[in-house]
Length: 353
Image 1 (cartoon, rainbow, N blue to C red):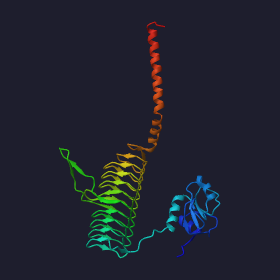
Image 2: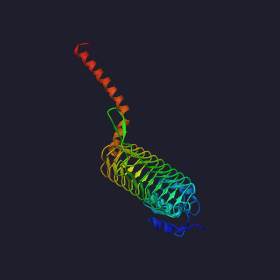
Image 3: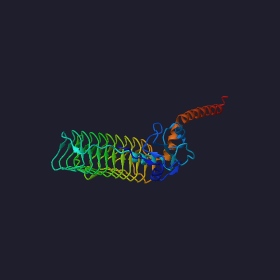
Image 4: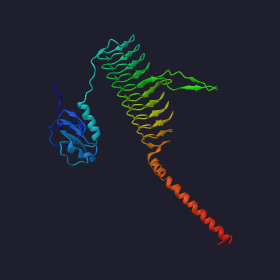
């Protein structure tokens, strides 16, 4: 089958960019600068990488607005990274398995499974499960009873979705993700024994959510732990019971949410950052890596540090911290000088010169 190509003019229109050079150049694929070849388009995110184009064999390039001259046919845009993603998605299509249920898969009673669903070897589907159109269930997946999964969702190998959870459409769960394990809820008695609280809620993943490999999202004690539409969560993230994550959020690897915290829409948590229990984080908040958020944060804030404070204040504090060794030296020197001056003054008072 011949791969469909697009003209550079068509691609420029797609990303609303300015066309530089031959509009009829045919493009069949997207690649990075180092590996692009004839018939492929590449990109550079910043002007400082422009010298890489001299060695590139690409047929065209996406460039930022501050680049005025380009040796290759080009599309000039405000956000090269976004334009590159749009064009890459145009040419890249994930290969999906053929519909059907493998003979080694175990399917419970009373399931509703669309004809276009693919279920791979050794998958287990519980009772009363609903699988929408073009759902892909890879090998080793375990789906509990009464789970509902929307159209076009993909569960990669060894994903676990526990009983009663709700998964939207076009969701991707990467290998090893666990959705709906019990929340970490215990009550401690007078003898120090931890009494487990039953976790009878579920997890709801709305449409277009992605959950990274080996990420765990705990079911609610009551009600639902909710991940909002379009949110993307990296590998190795922990989300506690009854947490609520808004739409379009980004959570980077090793970040975490304690129970019952709430993130607004468009929140970004960088790597190893965390949010304490029952804390509310407003829309559009950005938290730097290793931030520890233990109190409510207003919408639009940028925070860093532990406990998290305004980013500009944290920069000032970090700068001051690096100066502490020199400050200690200065203090010791001043103490010696004061001591010496005090000694001189005492000698003068006693007439000892």
